[in-house]
Image (cartoon, rainbow, N blue to C red; front, side, top):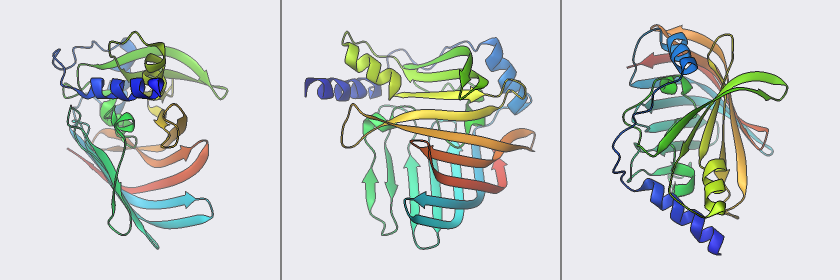
Length: 250
């Protein structure tokens, strides 16, 4: 129980207003190159995607339409209108009052725990965050981890996690593993290939649920490179496939 409380309290700590202001992180050489490859010298504040979705949950296999929007302030909205149901996922802007929740086909609202709502990086719009955002909190730490090998393939890894003062080893490890996002860049195109993060289990707060998002079929939209095929995996099992048919940026 003490460890669970420590982890929860740490989440609250990281969501309090920061006295350090916005980010002052200097991007690495690789981050500058990745930004140039994806944005071609432009700056964007929002991404809007429209297409079709296939949702798999056990024996349930549904398809339908998808509308996704993400903004530089960390807010996002995913709307899935499936054959027999619907689902909406929403995240508010980053900051101390940030909330995340989803609604089911009946319109019932389900709040997502604070632990799973720490880092405001929309999972379907990695291009948006190849540029550093002054709207992200100062507690967000971005590290260039260099070349790594994942599943036998070489990528360049950039990690995002929150830094909080704590002398307890358990919360620190919890924040590093569960409260973090890793983006794996293809070393030739310099475009995000995979994004991964770990959710905190509702049943066991110290148990992690692995989530991976795979991006492919990049196309240039108004000069910006966006993925038109997106797959989301839960514990290495395919849950959602998105095929984008139209996209716009701001």
